[in-house]
Length: 172
Image (cartoon, rainbow, N blue to C red; front, side, top):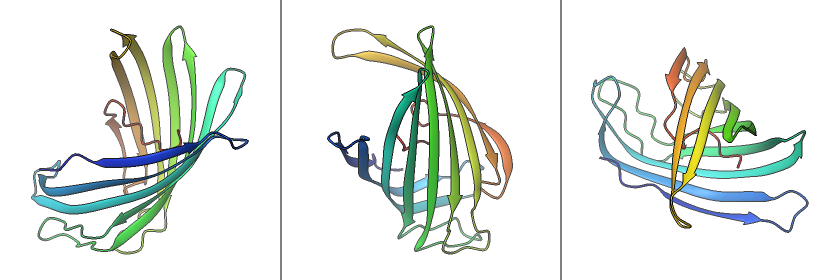
Protein backbone atom coordinates (compact mmCIF):
# COMPACT_ATOMS: atom_id res chain seq x y z
CA UNK A 1 0.00 0.00 0.00
CA UNK A 2 1.59 3.29 -1.03
CA UNK A 3 1.89 6.12 1.43
CA UNK A 4 0.61 9.54 0.30
CA UNK A 5 3.19 11.28 -1.88
CA UNK A 6 4.98 14.38 -0.63
CA UNK A 7 5.48 17.35 -2.93
CA UNK A 8 7.32 20.57 -2.11
CA UNK A 9 7.61 23.25 -4.78
CA UNK A 10 8.20 26.93 -5.22
CA UNK A 11 7.42 29.32 -8.07
CA UNK A 12 9.78 32.22 -8.83
CA UNK A 13 7.34 34.84 -10.14
CA UNK A 14 9.84 37.71 -10.36
CA UNK A 15 11.67 36.22 -13.37
CA UNK A 16 10.88 37.06 -17.01
CA UNK A 17 9.16 33.64 -17.19
CA UNK A 18 7.63 32.10 -14.03
CA UNK A 19 9.85 29.18 -12.97
CA UNK A 20 8.45 26.35 -10.83
CA UNK A 21 10.92 23.97 -9.14
CA UNK A 22 10.21 21.15 -6.76
CA UNK A 23 10.80 17.74 -5.28
CA UNK A 24 8.32 14.88 -5.11
CA UNK A 25 8.66 11.64 -3.14
CA UNK A 26 6.62 8.45 -2.88
CA UNK A 27 7.23 5.44 -0.63
CA UNK A 28 5.33 2.31 -1.57
CA UNK A 29 5.38 -0.41 1.07
CA UNK A 30 3.56 -3.06 -0.98
CA UNK A 31 1.38 -2.72 -4.03
CA UNK A 32 -0.01 -5.21 -6.53
CA UNK A 33 0.97 -4.21 -10.03
CA UNK A 34 -1.70 -3.79 -12.68
CA UNK A 35 -1.43 -7.23 -14.26
CA UNK A 36 -1.59 -8.95 -10.87
CA UNK A 37 1.75 -10.73 -11.26
CA UNK A 38 3.19 -9.73 -7.90
CA UNK A 39 4.27 -6.97 -5.55
CA UNK A 40 6.51 -4.00 -6.18
CA UNK A 41 7.72 -1.59 -3.56
CA UNK A 42 10.32 1.07 -2.92
CA UNK A 43 10.91 4.77 -3.26
CA UNK A 44 10.47 7.18 -6.13
CA UNK A 45 12.18 10.56 -5.85
CA UNK A 46 11.64 13.29 -8.47
CA UNK A 47 13.28 16.65 -9.06
CA UNK A 48 11.43 18.89 -11.48
CA UNK A 49 11.46 22.35 -13.03
CA UNK A 50 9.09 23.99 -15.47
CA UNK A 51 8.35 27.35 -17.02
CA UNK A 52 5.08 28.81 -18.27
CA UNK A 53 5.68 30.36 -21.67
CA UNK A 54 3.78 33.45 -22.86
CA UNK A 55 0.27 32.79 -24.19
CA UNK A 56 -0.03 32.85 -27.96
CA UNK A 57 -3.48 33.41 -29.52
CA UNK A 58 -5.14 32.23 -26.31
CA UNK A 59 -3.03 29.06 -26.01
CA UNK A 60 -1.03 28.53 -22.81
CA UNK A 61 2.31 26.74 -23.23
CA UNK A 62 4.76 25.18 -20.81
CA UNK A 63 8.00 23.24 -20.89
CA UNK A 64 9.51 21.19 -18.13
CA UNK A 65 12.15 18.71 -17.06
CA UNK A 66 11.81 15.91 -14.50
CA UNK A 67 14.56 13.69 -13.09
CA UNK A 68 13.17 10.41 -11.73
CA UNK A 69 15.23 8.37 -9.25
CA UNK A 70 14.30 4.98 -7.78
CA UNK A 71 16.83 4.47 -4.97
CA UNK A 72 15.21 1.39 -3.40
CA UNK A 73 12.80 0.10 -6.06
CA UNK A 74 12.14 -3.65 -5.94
CA UNK A 75 10.27 -5.28 -8.80
CA UNK A 76 8.16 -8.45 -8.52
CA UNK A 77 10.11 -11.68 -8.16
CA UNK A 78 11.22 -13.05 -11.49
CA UNK A 79 11.61 -9.61 -13.08
CA UNK A 80 14.43 -7.10 -13.26
CA UNK A 81 15.45 -5.41 -10.03
CA UNK A 82 16.15 -1.76 -10.88
CA UNK A 83 17.55 -0.52 -7.56
CA UNK A 84 19.31 2.77 -8.15
CA UNK A 85 17.68 3.29 -11.54
CA UNK A 86 17.00 6.81 -12.82
CA UNK A 87 15.78 8.53 -15.96
CA UNK A 88 14.94 11.97 -17.32
CA UNK A 89 11.83 13.36 -18.97
CA UNK A 90 11.22 16.49 -21.04
CA UNK A 91 7.66 17.81 -21.25
CA UNK A 92 5.87 20.23 -23.56
CA UNK A 93 2.27 21.21 -22.77
CA UNK A 94 -0.34 23.36 -24.47
CA UNK A 95 -3.85 24.19 -23.27
CA UNK A 96 -6.78 26.43 -24.06
CA UNK A 97 -10.21 27.08 -22.59
CA UNK A 98 -12.97 26.34 -25.10
CA UNK A 99 -16.52 27.21 -23.95
CA UNK A 100 -15.53 26.79 -20.31
CA UNK A 101 -13.79 23.43 -20.84
CA UNK A 102 -10.01 23.25 -20.61
CA UNK A 103 -8.51 21.25 -23.48
CA UNK A 104 -4.90 20.29 -22.90
CA UNK A 105 -2.25 18.25 -24.68
CA UNK A 106 1.14 17.23 -23.35
CA UNK A 107 4.04 15.39 -24.92
CA UNK A 108 6.67 13.78 -22.71
CA UNK A 109 9.97 12.34 -23.90
CA UNK A 110 11.82 9.97 -21.58
CA UNK A 111 15.54 9.30 -21.94
CA UNK A 112 18.70 8.42 -20.03
CA UNK A 113 17.58 5.34 -18.08
CA UNK A 114 20.63 4.19 -16.13
CA UNK A 115 19.92 0.47 -15.73
CA UNK A 116 17.69 -2.40 -16.77
CA UNK A 117 17.62 -4.57 -19.85
CA UNK A 118 14.96 -2.50 -21.59
CA UNK A 119 16.21 1.08 -21.55
CA UNK A 120 13.31 3.47 -21.51
CA UNK A 121 13.23 6.14 -24.18
CA UNK A 122 10.21 7.26 -26.11
CA UNK A 123 7.21 9.56 -26.20
CA UNK A 124 3.99 9.74 -24.19
CA UNK A 125 1.13 11.84 -25.59
CA UNK A 126 -1.80 12.92 -23.40
CA UNK A 127 -5.03 14.66 -24.42
CA UNK A 128 -7.21 15.84 -21.54
CA UNK A 129 -10.55 17.64 -21.13
CA UNK A 130 -11.36 19.30 -17.81
CA UNK A 131 -14.07 21.38 -16.19
CA UNK A 132 -14.11 22.91 -12.71
CA UNK A 133 -17.28 23.71 -10.77
CA UNK A 134 -16.97 26.11 -7.82
CA UNK A 135 -19.08 24.94 -4.88
CA UNK A 136 -17.92 27.62 -2.41
CA UNK A 137 -15.05 30.11 -2.26
CA UNK A 138 -12.83 27.31 -0.90
CA UNK A 139 -14.26 24.20 -2.59
CA UNK A 140 -14.47 23.11 -6.21
CA UNK A 141 -15.21 19.89 -8.06
CA UNK A 142 -12.86 19.13 -10.95
CA UNK A 143 -13.97 16.71 -13.66
CA UNK A 144 -11.34 15.40 -16.06
CA UNK A 145 -11.28 12.84 -18.85
CA UNK A 146 -8.43 11.99 -21.12
CA UNK A 147 -6.55 9.50 -23.21
CA UNK A 148 -2.89 8.69 -23.28
CA UNK A 149 -0.81 7.07 -26.01
CA UNK A 150 2.62 5.62 -25.34
CA UNK A 151 4.94 5.64 -28.34
CA UNK A 152 7.66 3.31 -27.04
CA UNK A 153 7.62 5.19 -23.71
CA UNK A 154 7.59 1.94 -21.74
CA UNK A 155 9.13 0.00 -24.66
CA UNK A 156 5.55 -0.55 -25.83
CA UNK A 157 2.92 1.24 -27.88
CA UNK A 158 -0.52 1.45 -26.26
CA UNK A 159 -3.46 3.66 -25.34
CA UNK A 160 -4.53 4.13 -21.72
CA UNK A 161 -6.96 6.18 -19.67
CA UNK A 162 -5.72 9.21 -17.77
CA UNK A 163 -6.34 9.58 -14.07
CA UNK A 164 -7.89 12.94 -13.11
CA UNK A 165 -5.26 15.53 -12.38
CA UNK A 166 -2.44 13.23 -13.55
CA UNK A 167 -1.68 14.45 -17.04
CA UNK A 168 1.96 13.42 -16.94
CA UNK A 169 2.85 17.07 -16.95
CA UNK A 170 5.17 18.73 -14.51
CA UNK A 171 5.59 21.76 -16.74
CA UNK A 172 3.00 23.86 -14.98
